[in-house]
Length: 557
Image 1 (cartoon, rainbow, N blue to C red):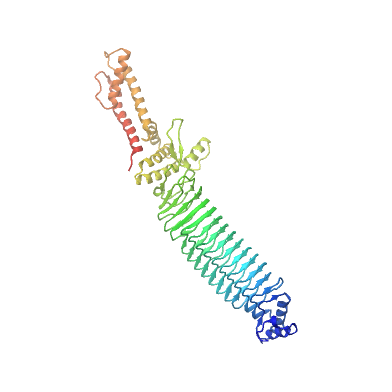
Image 2: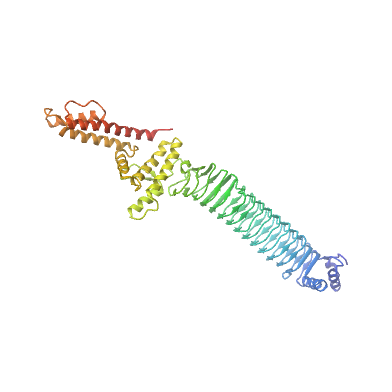
């Protein structure tokens, strides 16, 4: 009866058949059978009696159906073949597979338990279907673990599992929650072209030299927080549809790629990651967090929809673009302490953006068809200008007699860098509002001397820092009016025309001539000459400031 299938052995001879196997005189063949719990129990009892251990060796269950209650827990299994077998409930807790574990094309109709199991060489779970929960928590895999085209309809748990050099999960489908928290995968792990329909958790744990998630779909949330990645990780052409977080994940060589990846989620976080490769991602998310991320080799993040991007403490040493779609309400919430040397922002609102502590702010490039900053105007006829959030907060704190979160000096520094950046790119009209804000904050600064504040105040009142043409021309007309009246009353010599209308006409004519540098009339007395001298200085200055303001608004570099 050596190597004969037990299904062809008479009932009375089965005990002898199992005893011969237990003593090493044959293999145990249970192919194409309906296996009831009593049979495995009988087999393990014979092995324990003959060998002193709960073990199963040289055994085949090809295409068999194992009923509920067939337990292989705490057993040592060697050269056991479960190819195309069907399990109602699989219990392999603490099992030890000392050779290859063959489960290819199996069906697990109930719960599959492999907790703390040990797989010696290769574990083959290709084309397997798990109808309910499959738990491999705490298991240890040997050289290779293959889950090619495997399907999980229930939860898949690999928490704190240890994999050998190769782990393959290609073309798999995870229908519910997938847990790999604390799992340690060896040199190469491949999840390419798999689909995670539910949430997936890769929190903590580690990947070895390389891990592939190319063309992988994450339809639920995906968490890679505090995950340790080895030399390379690829998410090229992957798709994220749920909340996604790589917060504080670590890439040893910074070699991670997101080329042509797409994100469609509420939250997408790359906090604290260092990218040594160019990064190209399409993101449709309400919240995108790049806090502390370092993009060492450039790239482009395209935002679709009304995303809010947080760039606090991020670093962009090489050219990198973050762009929104025209007409969208995508915005940047903060660039505090970020290095913006290579950053280009396109079609993003900076209305609620915080700038305090940003580095290389003068190198930030802002490209937009609409004004990216909020507007501020004084009075019903006040000229509107772009302002930053810090100035609004500073004004509100003064109005409420509260301690401001930022000082006037800090706001002036931000405006100075933004202004310098526009001027370096020959965009003087774009720099005008930033210059106005800088000067206004200098005027309000407590660190400026009183004389400096007075000079700046006069400059502001007379012409809006050389940027308000209407104010300069209004000041010029007011100067003419005051000077004309003063000359008419006190600046004419005795014996000059004494009629009121004649006197006023003479005074205003003298004022107009003096304001444009013409020769003063002979009818002026000493006081009139002094007034005329003042007009010769102030008049051209005010006209020049007005002309300069007009030129600054229309000039194109």
